[in-house]
Length: 76
Image (cartoon, rainbow, N blue to C red):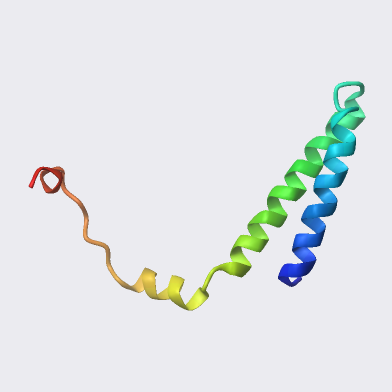
């Protein structure tokens, strides 16, 4: 999927969530469907976030060792 498709699916999921929000407290089936749509939206947002990351920069950051901060570094 590309970014535009994911954004469209997120928008469709939000629309479905709005429609179900009125009925989510009335029945258990609606509540389960509402919860599954929330999970689907979270997965789509994570996919979109992963697409927007620069993979080369992420790999480069992993190669550079981080200097651990000691408590005394905060007081200098």
